[in-house]
Every structure is written in structure tokens, then in C-alpha cells.
Length: 386
Ligand SMILES: Cc1ncc(COP(=O)(O)O)c(C=O)c1O
Image 1 (tube, protein in one colour):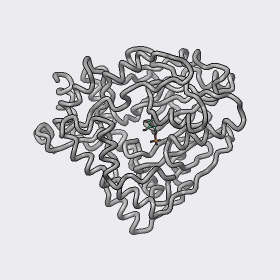
Image 2 (image 1 turned 90 degrees about the vertical axis):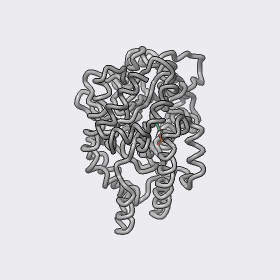
Image 3 (image 1 turned 135 degrees about the vertical axis):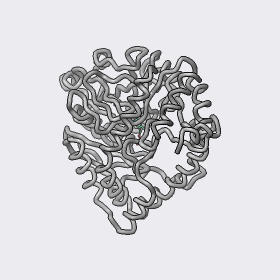
Image 4 (image 1 turned 120 degrees about the horizontal axis):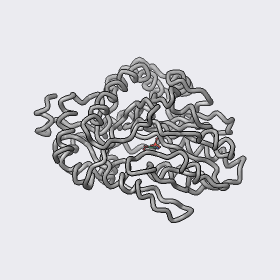
């Protein structure tokens, strides 16, 4: 794939791309290489230096809801503190557990989190604090783990977008009372859907039944159809940039089966990916660093963090939607996908002004392992010069 081909729109790069091809699934399915999902969860923990009780789930939101429901059994507190710059599914998970959302904003225009400000937002009503590690970058935690322990607030790390990164030499997912992981199609390890809860506080979590291998196979086949349709639309400028459009493609493809707990085929695919993941992260990191080194305003990395980049986030001077149209026309699926608007606070009317800035002007850009370096360079030039 040449730079010219990319420039002519004949090649398209999705925002995040999985690193398994359909034939890997075919081979696993044919060889009946099925695996106990709990065994995969344990392997995952060993691979990333994590300890605790690991439960495979249908999604990260499912993992969070299960954990919060377990917490509710032992505490009358009713609120969960979330980043306003966040996936709406996280707020949905809080609501599904019968709890209310309170939000905190990013600290400044640079997109960083301020652990002291987050700490100051914790109240007596707070059951849990969910900290997101976004785009592959660890969030600065400061003394939050200790403070939460003192205040009786459960600290949950949302590792949906970040696996294998470290903060002060310690892996993300090891700092809180619990961590949630996502195996959605655009996540660090893609199983086309699925999640995991890791808890270390003996919370009595309801464990879901794993899917059957045949259901896993259906889901992965449907995902294949969905990805082909979605990627064919990338260069149709602006087309695939809206959430509504994505939902339309998704609903039309057979990929509509609802989220299901990880079953034995997805578990086998997950194990297959674990050994290949470090090399993929090196590729993603190299491309993310190239974007950061090009003088663009990119997602901040705390001083003692080693990221495992998933995608880069670039703050542009104008509307990210406008910049995205040109990039998509040239085959780069960039856009203000994460996220178009701040998560709403159920408790008080708060204005998350820095979140609003990143929602409007923050551009998700691909930095994945399938992008030739020349394509990364031409994407950078397009962002710079419009
Ligand atoms: C930061 C973050 N948290 C949670 C989720 C939800 O993950 P899932 O789709 O597995 O529930 C996502 C993904 O969409 C995410 O980006």
C-alpha cells in the first residue's frame, strides 16, 4: 500500500484495526481449539502482571455493572464518580446498577487529569470512582488509591482502551480495587465483543454463563461482515464519521447479535492474540510517537507513564468534524469519535469545559500496525495543512 494509493483513496485505514485475520478464527474453529474463558482470563492476567479474581463478561459495561451491583449489597452509598470525558456506556453501566452519575472534568486544555481535583470531588455519597486510562495512556493517579481506601470509596480502573501500559513501572489495572477491560472490535485486543472484570476486594460478583462455541463463531462471522461494510465506507467523505451512520451499518449487517459473555472460541482467539500483542503495541507506539513528534497537540502522557497506544488524539484548532471530512476522503478514518459530548452529571448541573473542548476539537486518528509509515506521514501533513 503506497502513499499515493492512500492519497487517491483506494486504501482505507480504520481508526483501530484488529491484528487477526479471519483465517485465524477459521483455523481455531476447524481445529476445535476451544478454551475455557476463565483460563483465558487467567492467562491475560499473567501476561500483564495483574492479580485478582478475573471474570469474563459480555463487555466492559457488563463488567462494571456486575461489580457495582456487588458493591451496592454492602454499602448504602448511591453515587459513582466518572470522568465527563468518557464513553456513554460507562454511565449506562452505572444506571444499570441503580446508581447515579457524578462527573469530573479534565484538568486543563491539555487534556490531563488532575488527581487532586478528582479527590476533592469525592463525597460521602460516593460508592466508587472510575478512572479511565484513555487511548492507551495511563491516567495520572497521584495518591488516589490511598485516598479512596481511606474514604471507603472503591477505585475502579477502566482499562477498556489501555492494556499493557505502565505507570511508575506498575501495570494499569493493578492500582484499583477493580479493573474493567473491553474486547470490542476497536479495542487493544479485539474479540469482536466481550469484557472482563478483575476485582481484588472479594466483591460477590454474579458470574455469567459463557457463550457456546457456535454463538462465538456467529458473532465473529458477523463481525467480519460488519468490518468489510464499514471499511468500504471510510472514503465516502463524512459518511462513516457519525455515530448514527455506524449504527445503521451495524444494524444492517448480521453483526447485530447482542453482547454475549466470552465463550470458548473467543477465549482461544484471545490466547492466540496475547503472544502477538507486545509486537503490535511496539508498532502502534512508534506511529503514535511520530504523530506527537510532528508538533501537533496530542493526548498528554504523564511523566512516569509508558503508554501502549491504541489510537492518537489530536487537538485541532477548528471543529474536528471539519478536519475529519478531508482525512476520511483520503481514506483515514479520523474523527471526534471519543467522544462527541460530555457525559451528563445526574446530581448537579456542572459544566465540563475542558471536556467540551476535547469533544469539539479532539480528533481520534489511526496509528495502528497496518499503516505504512508513509501513510502516517501523509496523514500528519493533512492534519497540519488541512
Ligand atoms: C473508555 C471506555 N470505557 C468503556 C467502554 C465500553 O466498552 P464495552 O463496549 O466493552 O462495554 C468503552 C468502549 O466503547 C470505552 O472506550
